[in-house]
Length: 208
Image 1 (cartoon, one colour):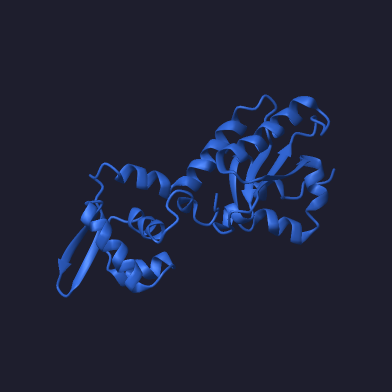
Image 2: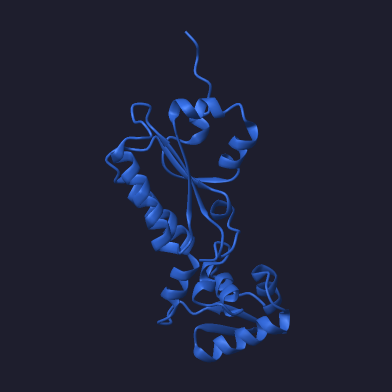
């Protein structure tokens, strides 16, 4: 799946970015506005897409003054599918959070970072996950290992992309906090899935 534009998996043409823009707002937008927000194609190309979608009834075109304003027809049978495609990243994050929340050994923290958190990347990008396990769970614990293996397979099943997992214990995390570059990679940006927020875990603990 293209992590920057998941909708392109099933709508690889300029229609995909145009539909993403329309699904994100209830307001009527001009062709130029849609082109700017879509960040793809040309103004003329976007207008051709809008005209074609208008003939199908999926998009409404309203003549306002000297401009045509376009909006998604949310009563159309296909509108819920467009909205679902527009929210694929959120759906993925929800599915991952649901799976991790069901683990027998609860993760202290789980988040995604990298391309999936930034909303960029491409078909070859990994889905980067940070997992913090409790200190009483070793990396060799077969129950923990099985959970992580299932999660990595779930990422492949859900997206077609490989999962890159960085996992360590809560105590091991403290040893990495002095490496600012690593912490920045994990935190800027990141999206927490379950557990304690990473910035709370990063607070130094009092001595004595």
